[in-house]
Amino acid sequence: MSVWEDVVGQESAVAAFTAAARAARQAAQQREAQAAAGLAPEEARDGVARPGAASPAGLAMTHAWLVTGPPGSGRSNAARAFAAALQCTGPVPGCGQCKPCRDVMAGSHPDVVRLATEKLIITMEEVKTLIGEAQRRPWTGRWRVILVEDADRMAERTTNVLLKSIEEPPPQTVWLLCTPSADDVLPTIRSRCRLVTLRIPPADAVAELLVRRDGADPELAARAARASQSHIGLARHLATDAGAWDRRRRLLLAPVSLRSVGDAVLAAASLVEAAESEAKEATAERDAREKAELTRALGLESDGKIPAALRAQIRQLEEDQKRRAKRARTDVLDRAMIDLLSFYRDVLTTQMGSDVERVNLDLSEAVDQAARTTSPEQSLARIAAIEECRSRLRSNAAPLLAVEALMVQLRPQAEGR
Ligand SMILES: [Zn+2]
Image (cartoon, rainbow, N blue to C red; front, top):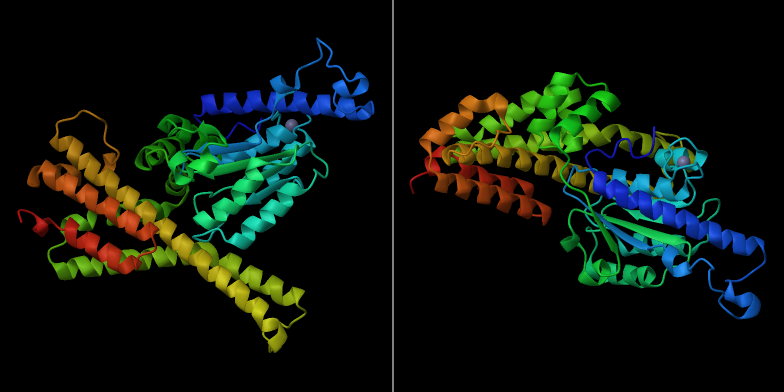
């Protein structure tokens, strides 16, 4: 089981990472050999660079990487596997068997620092902490790896602080930044990073992963991979949660049955409500556990009175949790938008007579019906409306208002005007 096992459908990215990890290992071994011999760089001994000495330039490590790929393509998984390969002490970098590999994959390696924010924005404070971490020498590993999962969630001011550290990193530090696309970071950051781009994995590779890793039924896994358009997290959700298909079906069939603006408003409310409760379900257990851990750590009874001096810490936790809930709701709504997009794309390709295979094989009746009763222009307008709603949700608009506006535009009666 190598660390690349679950990085599915990304052969060229894996090849680039593996080659880099090999080069990094050679560079580190050379550095260690010199240190063991009590030598500074080769030249230092006699002041002359000897011909034939391994050229350090040829083994130079790239200290900043930008890993991009569409949502659900497995960016952070790929970056974590690369971090493991860098720390690996097995025969082939990323063996998955040695202790460093296993520790990195389990998230417990002391020299792999990971920032995965569940908030909408990475704060200046968090970035300053990371920069501090990046300045340390490795504790046990060969490299100090700093992995930022959502580097696009950073304000420009924060990015500029980060830039300095990326420009002049300590010799053993490696930054791994993940974003959906290279355009999501400032050009100044981009130009200092080596870019590795993940593609949308093929549906059959995603299905195979769901069967192998999550024990999903093969036929269900294949359907889920297709319906989610190879979004790995979404596909897993569909393949393992019995209620998920039902929710998806209701979501996709809702707009075509809207009769009035009133219907549209109600449908919007129920979509946002469903997103909220799904998000709550996903975070509730963890929230409660964190609160219990904190009260215990502060030496408080779980239901006792909280002394004023400690209230700030509790409040801080509650605020973090609130932000996390908001991010979870945004993610759920974004997935709903991706699903809706797939429906209207199916409608549009049908109207254009294209033979591209449909995403929503299980809803062909509804797709056919919509294709017959509307025009391609209307489908295009609806696709644009969904994209618009997505970007409003991402830019922090009130979800209910954004979704209401969308539903009004999706309703069949809006046609012909
Ligand atoms: Zn290993």
